[in-house]
Structures are given as C-alpha cells and as structure tokens.
Image (tube, rainbow, N blue to C red; front, side, top):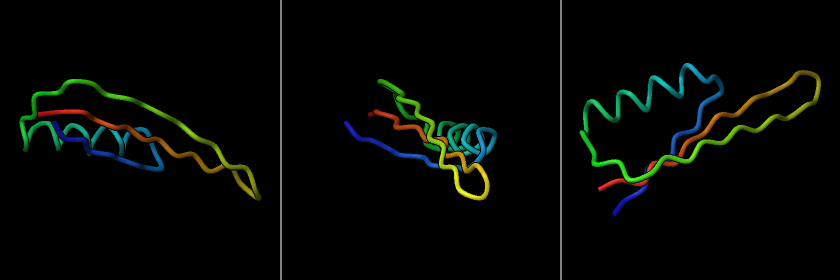
Length: 55
C-alpha cells in the first residue's frame, strides 16, 4: 500500500492534479481523504488537500 498527498490553493487545481495522477498511474484506489483549511490575515487563504491510499 502507498499514499499520495496533494495540496493546492484552488479546488479546481486539486481536481486537475488528482485526475492527472489517476490517468497516468492507474492506481487501485483504496480510499481518498479530503480536507480544507482557511487562514485569515489581510486576505483569506484557502488550502485544499487530499490523501489517496492506493496500491
């Protein structure tokens, strides 16, 4: 079993990198965990991440 972590500032970018990984690697996906985070300073900063467990 292996894991792959993706971290992007925009949800569309996260979709793109995950889809590219799936197309290129053709992994047997066991599970996907999705998370979002927000930081507020002078502007709001979002972080979208996913952890994929695969074979």
